Image (cartoon, rainbow, N blue to C red; front, side, top):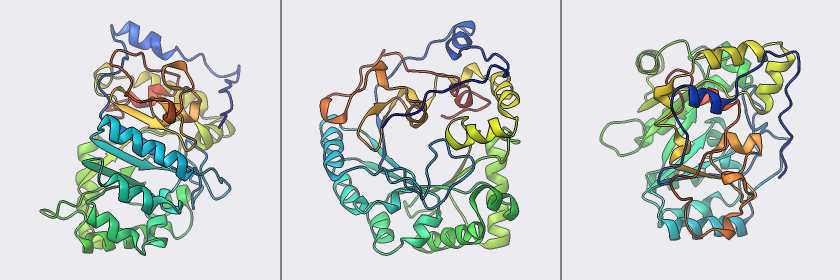
Length: 324
């Protein structure tokens, strides 16, 4: 798949290149040993969220072929990744997800499924049993405790269905102590803002309110800034917020977040089987090691010490606590 080049409007303020921010802090961004393989199995989604960096939605039909899935499974088997992280789009919409999960369960100690909860709510049959059986970690998008705010991002009726799906997962043991079934939530700010509270403080607030108001629970909450790519980038430009938002990200650059960035230990596979340093670099069209490498062509993980491809979107991952 060819992604469009990232064009910057000349009226926007100049954004310092991300490598310059690293150099000024005496830092570099090189790979460590890869222990996580993130696999995007398709861009088709049941929602068109305003903050989506991949422009996923019902209008997208790109799906990973079974042949490419088989190549990914071979790669996992040969390289012994500790974690395989399945994402999309909405991975629940892929007809070969059961095939992929069944075989992954024999190859990797830990499997993660990323969900928007609504796709899981609408495709429960057979899938919930597999999730429990494989002790799959569920990482689910739940943008806000505010119903109108959530629906402004993700659509009408989403908030209540999401809560119902969390309670269904709780009934299965997800988010409950001692079950080994892990349910994590991801909250993203609405609009052109960075997270307003420290992650621990926000997690405690979500846990308290979800339990008190809806008798729902989860394990951990991750609060991330939105990445200025895809649909979210287009919205920022249309609304006149791109320049101010980038200034916020640059101003919030945290050198301490660099060491633990997920791209150091992660390999990302696109729906068509090409390798990237992370899911965001997929959207930006920045291949791993500046070369277009297909998963069928690789037999060993990227060597430690290889530079990680960067762009101005990388400021998102180092703003505040960052993506770690």
